[in-house]
Length: 224
Ligand SMILES: Nc1[nH]c(=O)nc2c1ncn2[C@H]1C[C@H](O)[C@@H](COP(=O)(O)OP(=O)(O)OP(=O)(O)O)O1
Figure: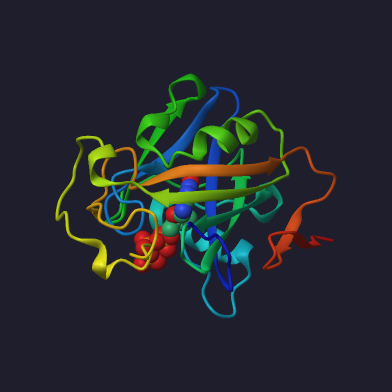
């Protein structure tokens, strides 16, 4: 049986920069690391002593070369990513901005590119993005989403930039005592992502901005 019980969380950030006049969003093609070969917003782990806002601004600068003024930087919500049989959830704080300063540039980790709202490459993004990104682009934030993901069996993974397909005995996201036992898995990162969305709960247009999520998955506090 799959389990989605969590005992701890890692705090991450995700930033979407939007050109409202042109109806375009800036995404980055992730060249390595978690979610490699997928288009996504910019972000990563929050460092000790940093607020999520500071961490998000730092990652945006590191990964896309641009800065955003504090007053333009808005919290759009929180997404709690939970992985099957993995007790560590990813509490991802999502930010958006309609303004930015500086020159967009590629770095070792990310290749930035603008996409028209109508041409967002959802088939080359995390599967959950098609649920919540349209809401962010349509201004239906703040939101809170709980996303449940399962590792895909190899046969369900599309042809893509699969490199090093290996058995998951090294993966932290697979427990071989699951119903998937006996199937071969991969840690490679195909175009559509190595995880399938199993279920989700999402509330949008919230009155307040979520600040922290409790281990039972409820919103622990809202921002002042
Ligand atoms: N299901 C999901 N949907 C999504 O849209 N973004 C996700 C996601 N799961 C994780 N992310 C984002 C959150 C965060 O911005 C990023 C992963 O964080 P990191 O960039 O820190 O990972 P890395 O393994 O590359 O670590 P670093 O060594 O810190 O670069 O992926």
